[in-house]
Structures are given as C-alpha cells and as structure tokens.
Image (tube, rainbow over all chains, first blue to last red):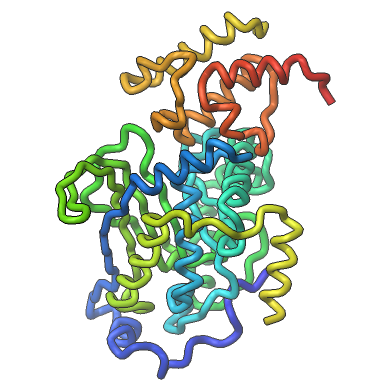
Amino acid sequence: MKWPLVERPTPNAQVPLYNRFYLHASSASQADPLLVWGTEIDADALQTFLQERNRGGRILVTAAHALIRATALALEQHPELNVRLVRRRIYAFRNVNIRMAFFHRRYSEIDLLLIEDANLKSLERIALEIWQRMLQAARGEGGRDRDLARLRRLPAFWFRQIVRLYGFLDRNLKLPTFGRLDGTRRGCMMVNDLSFLGAPPMRMYKPTHFPDKSDSFNLTLGPIEKKVVTRSGQFVSATVMPLFLRADHRLVDAQQVGRFLAAVRDHLSNPERLAGGYYESSDIDRAIVQKLKK
Amino acid sequence: MTADRKGLEVDLVHFVQSRGTRYAKATLQTDLLETGLLDSLLLMDLIFHIEDAYGLRFDSDQVNPSNFRTIEDTVSFVLKQKSAPQV
C-alpha cells in the first residue's frame, strides 16, 4: 500500500484567486476548467539526439522515452503542477511519477503504465522499464494483465457499480493505492506519444479527462512534420513535432501552464539536457532514499 | 519454423514490407532507425512475429538498437540466439 499524496492540502491562501473561482464554482455554473495549449518542438534536434544515443546505446530509446524524461524534469522544476484534486482540495504528489498510454498488443487496446521517480532515472532506464512492460503486456504475463483480465470478465452491471463507487471514493477521499490496477493513479501527468509512423498531421488535440479525475494534466506529442521556419533570420526547412498540454484551471492558470510547457519544449528542443539520471536500479533506490530523507 | 539465414531474411523482409506503402522499399540493409521506420508498434510486432515463428523469447535488455538497426542485424541476432545453448 502506498500513499501517493502528501498529508496536507495546499493552503487556500496559496491557491491563486482565479483558480479558486473555478475550484469552488457550482456545477450549475457549467464552468469548463479545461485549458489546452499547443506548441511545437524542434524535432531535428531530438531526432539527431535519439539517433546518436541509439548508435552506441544498450537500449533502444524513442521520442516517447524522451517525452517522459523531459516531462519529469519539467515537473521537478515546476512542482506546482505535480498535484491533483481531491474534492475541492489540492494535494501535491510525493514523487515525480509519469504515466504513459501504450498499445496493449494482446488486447489491441490502450493500457497505462507508470514510471516512478522518472526525474531520477536515465533515459535508458526509462526505456528499459517501458520495453519490459510492453513485452510483459503482449505476453499477458504481468500481474496487472491478470487483474485486467479479471476486470474484463465482470458483468456490465457490477463493472459499472465498482467503477462508480471507486470513482466516488477517489474523488472525495485521499486514498492510498493498493495494487496494480490503481497504481497508475500515483502520477498527475499522463503522456501520450502519438508520433507513430503514418499518423496524420496534428493541428489540435484535446484528450479527455479520466472519470476518476486523477490525471490532472495530459501532454501529447504528435507526428513529425516538415515546415519552413526561420533560423538566424533565414527561411529553412525543418522538422517539427506538435505538443499539446491539457490542464485543469482549478489547479493552475495559463501562465503556469505556459511556463511548464516552455520547460518541456526546452528540454525536447535541447535534448542534451535529458542526459543524466540513474541507470542501475540500486542507484535509483539510493537516490530515492536520499530524496525522501530530505 | 526452421531458422536458416536465407529463409529468415526473406520472411522478415516480407513481414516489414507488408506493413504498408511506407515500408515497401525496406531491404535487408535499410537502416530502420535512421529512416524512422522502426516505431514501437513495428518493433513489438517484429519481436512477437519472431517469438511465434522461431520459438525465441526476447528480454527487455535485448531491445538493443544494434539488434534492430537493419533487418540483417535482426536476422543475425535471431540466428545467434538460436545457436546459443538454452538456459
């Protein structure tokens, strides 16, 4: 059993006034607290970086792994975004955990995985964990896959009752996480890599909100496109990737969203900043223990 | 399925080429990483095609760029694994 959130909520006085308007709005107001900000990143730099890492690396790294590491580093820089709502209170997460959607090959559907302490892990370590989970999922061997298989067998009536009850408890109480199914709730940020080959150019993307409200933010990377851009005053052909952030105005305002997105963009456009972190698990464990002591 | 080099090469090239027009020109020597053809979807499909057809089992630390850079590299990796004593 793990307690992903800190003990006390963010004091009301520290929540910006406009966020509080949204936070305390009645449902009759029908206020929509969703903010979406789209931008682009320099894909040339990221592609070159990934190609170099893959020339001599031990583990195949992709844009999805870079996105996770960049998001984690940006969350570390902007801890005001590493939060979620419980009822009308804002609680910070204890760790920088990132959840990612991936294609579950065995069931031909999307599933989630969680990279814990992604800010402390190297790109290769993140990649290793993701490949491990994807292989495990495709074979149906993981504990989570067995739990998901049990969930699929539930009759629709009981599925609905359980989801509604759990959603109600999760929205209103600061719950611990118990197992493999609810483990992905331990992170506020969900990342999607939709840059797969053949995906159409992305102009706009608004991911949905999870019914359990645990994913406060969603960051989606779109496919590579060629565009004419200016560099040092010259028009040049460059490759770019769209990046969309969906945020909750009850937690952050547009200025905070912009600063966070700029940090992610900065890391991805200057990917040498993604270096660092720990590869071996024993080093990660030591780093986490040290961090928790602080 | 037996894993002789020629048969394996033909099978894997056909497997990659059959994924659509973008892959139609892939050859044994095409650098799948530099050309951006190898995404996680193709990688997983390739791994499980090899596992099902040739009875191998991949570990996550074998998802190494040197094993998947070209189809030729993958063929060499599969043959090496097949000839290695099973633990």
